[in-house]
Length: 195
Image 1 (cartoon, rainbow, N blue to C red):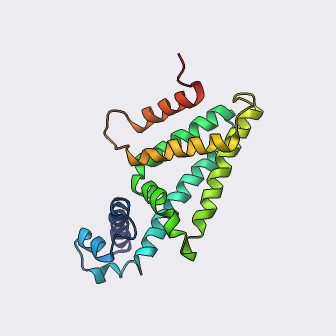
Image 2: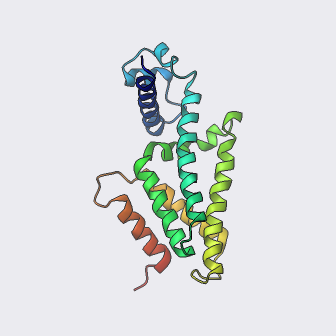
Image 3: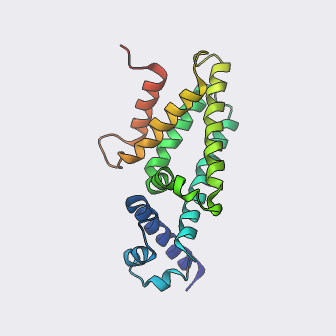
């Protein structure tokens, strides 16, 4: 089998596994479930991966490298602090739209996966995420575009929870696009709901 065909099949298997992990949960998904969904024998799956832990590891690492690379670009950009905050929310909703399964896995399974040493990096990513959002908020306060009396930790948790929980209800092709939803979130966040 040519290397590109093998890589493509590997990507297909990861996509199938990601969908099952997001839908059924990591613990409840077996190697046989993944193989059955892929139309192969369980043993054939081991040609590509040594375990389902390796699969979820690759799924999460690849997704998070992309997401945090985008956050790093935002922080390094010349955009003003308010625009950077807006871009971070838009990037987050874009991730929910394009990587729904990966986001759901991280949201629903991180606590369990952290019980395994190989997933200790997830705690680092949680801390990195916190630092990204706190930096964006502090930069906005320092620039005078966000209120100086904001409780940074509370505001960070509000943004984190309201943005990422959207993975539980947002579906592509719905009444609003992910960008429209992100803009509505930003309007509520930055302008409030007062008349």
